[in-house]
Image 1 (cartoon, rainbow, N blue to C red):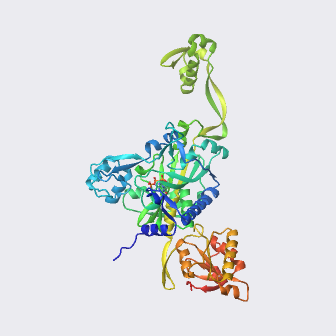
Image 2: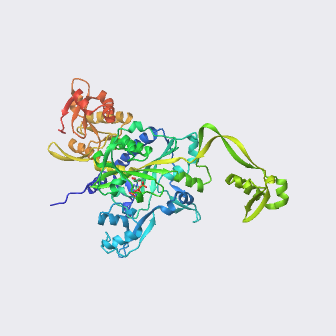
Image 3: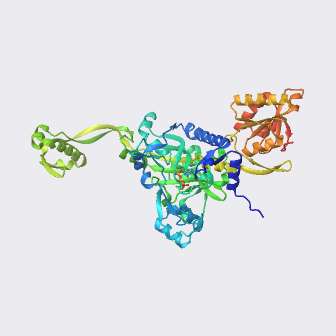
Length: 599
Ligand SMILES: Nc1ncnc2c1ncn2[C@@H]1O[C@H](COP(=O)(O)OP(=O)(O)OP(=O)(O)O)[C@@H](O)[C@H]1O
């Protein structure tokens, strides 16, 4: 009995044959972890990006930026990636193949999230379970497991003096520009900044085609908020139903999901932060809109040891393919980690001025030392003594209570007369204070979204007694909107009319494929396989009737066809494409010429 192909294998085959994606640089043997999106794939991917932009940038009223993909080393020193962005590497002593030690453990033992385990424990588990190299079968027991930094390093400019790194996430490009971007937000919170772009990770073992690659596309939103004042618009998503898999359930190992609504999840504290809850709701609706199968989708909270170095809490959106759950997006509460770090390491202000409701009277310690006395007494050190007095006044005003004040300069203690120090407390009115915004980050993997859409859209049925496979992609993301065919290619009138329709549809903004080769059934099948939602066919009946000229519109998923006047074609296609009008409406309004068949 031949073994049933896995979903992943089928997808890889279809992707290659139909031009969705394939290993890059094949003529030179390729390099693992790099993919080229072919014509169908590039179009699907950019439609996903457009849909994301529409929801997370436009609808949210956010700012989109485009930062460089290479940044200098100090950025990643500050962000923590230089020190902390590691995976566990184990090398095979026999064939030299590199493996992610945590993944080997997960595959061989069933332990989940092995990346949370300390290295010695991982080494013990490799020994205990006699784990072998998946490439050559050699035993890995006793081999050292090392931390391997995933960033690609490069040199900026000639020579090697200025190291740079290809960004491992798009987020840092937003954080480092915060001092500029906040000006566009008129220095007032909350505001969100988005970016869609490439990220690079030198993954130890890229796998599952475009699921784990070394160069991929992220769509990220950094939501900057005042943690004490800003609230999300939870009302707008409170009834959205979600499947949650909280850390507590995972730790108890009882595999319990919670089916609830976003509103209830936040209220009951299952999702600890309202902003995170809000974005889970928005994401749930967005994934559904673009065609992710919601029965194969869930949110899973990170276990404490699993969180990234910056995250206080994190939920992943996961989709199921081939029985495995794949992380397709992360929703992290990053607190003030990133902006504080850049404030500390960088030369700019990564804070926002928060206005008080009412101006406040504050007491301020002031020292105005008499330099005509300090000068002669301390010579060149007089300036330092003054600075030390000012610093002391701020830290410890009580030090000025006696007749003499002691300050330390370069390890030496100096005494200054209290009269000369001239210390006093002054009342001042202040209108606000500087705060470091907190960040909530929804981070989407575009490639993994594309992979999920293809896997979830794949369907098989029978049309006219013949098996067919088709991609039931939503019209919003499908690579091609409409296929246009003359029924036969050797009748000039049909060809001319079909070509005219192609022009009209393209002018109206549709992406159109024209095809006149092979039987009409084959042409429908080709479009079915790449997920084109509608096909328009020009036949003799349509041009030779008594009334106005007509063509047929065929719906991909049901293979039903209706006959529509050419003059209505653009409007009707636009209505069914956008979802404003169900195809059933067309079936009611026009003549049904093929009830689920391609005859
Ligand atoms: N190597 C990769 N190839 C493709 N997409 C990726 C890769 N790494 C991360 N992503 C995408 O970017 C998103 C955000 O990145 P994040 O840092 O949260 O991933 P991650 O937790 O490191 O992923 P993983 O645990 O799978 O390595 C992920 O949800 C995923 O969709």
